Image 1 (spheres, rainbow, N blue to C red):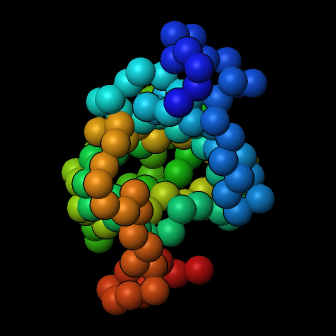
Image 2 (image 1 turned 120 degrees about the vertical axis):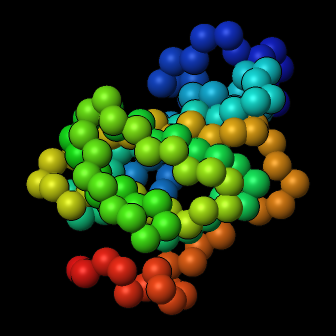
Amino acid sequence: MTAQPLRFVTPSEALKEEYKGRTNYWVCRPDLTETQAFQICQATLPPGEGHNFHTHPELEEVIYVLAGEVEQWVEQTKRILRPGEVAHIPAGLVHATFNASSQDAVILAILSPGKTQGPFMVDVSQAAPWCHLRQR
């Protein structure tokens, strides 16, 4: 944790995570603020990019679209989400987020709780049926 937990977080103070050639900005989580209940990450998905099928065994998640549109999967159900729309993913459910458009998409991923005991994420994208769901 930082010396003093932050009450306000600017982009320059966010925890930056390099992921597949882009930067995710963690703006709220226990090692940045005093939150124990949740984590918030702002992520930009360039055209054709995404976060393949995975699960968070101990975390529920809300995907909130800020800009652009995403192809959101929750289990085997797919929806196109646009700004202001949300997907809720209970802990342990397989999900994926892709940008199938020609413009950047920006999302907020809100996860709860702030801390877990087990793995943060488990990639299942190579296992059936997930590896066969999406036509590329």
